[in-house]
Length: 173
Image 1: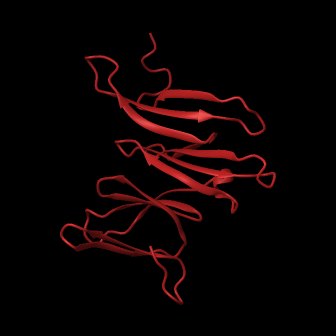
Image 2: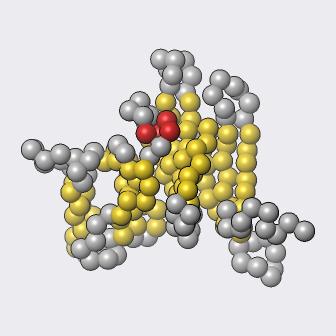
Image 3: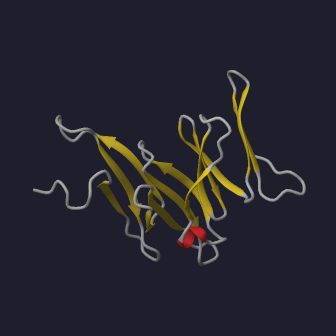
């Protein structure tokens, strides 16, 4: 990631270090504040306002906007500390921290986003992840989402684990 004098935002260059081949260059009009590989050839870029995915396996591709940052994650005082996606790239999780009391407490905020439904849910907490778990021998793995919830102003922490691959109520006898 770098910046060019007189150009807004940042540019990103991706190289294959083994073959010394340049896989792509992207000039973002916005500041890129966080990035992470979410798949072997997909780089997630978080700007001040958006989350993008860039598939560098496709020649001359440009990042695609997945969703806009929302809630406290869209505020200027929020520091992005994590980003992840499930193995099917159908669910995304953006995690950030902020403070409302000059650093006495650190509030955690997460934005869970469904790519297929184009819907989001804002969560209070500091950590979350996706995983695949075999629940029985007759079906494929369940796509799980786990997150730690801590509501602002409390010290109670809860761990939530849910199957995000099934519709709510589905599979209940």
